[in-house]
Image (cartoon, rainbow, N blue to C red; front, side, top):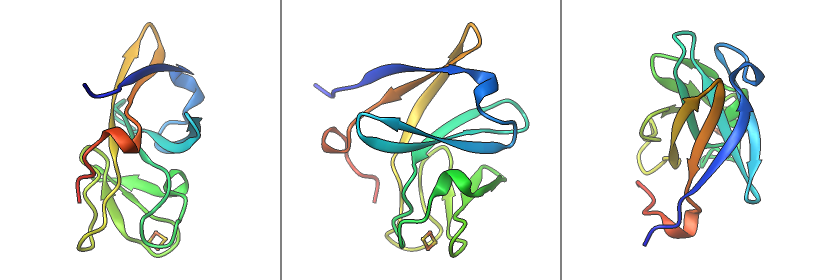
Length: 113
Ligand code: FES
């Protein structure tokens, strides 16, 4: 059975509107984004190209743009704009004003590419 850990990341206001924030979860950096229309997404923070910090990237059109070389990653699926580049994505929810992540360690998950 897949090991999924549900973690409270704190108040929604802790993530600036239209930006990302990096959380350290189970020893892994996870980029959490709050879009301008109120949605929350989370993907691995480390870009598979050359380890750029995706939490510092610009978001728009459902994607995050890596701040180093501009590769794009779908916030929902983690699919990358370049062949064989992707990041893991995580299910998110908001309850009583708090953000929750359903974190799955890399060892437990089928990497999407
Ligand atoms: S490190 Fe992300 S595109 Fe190069």
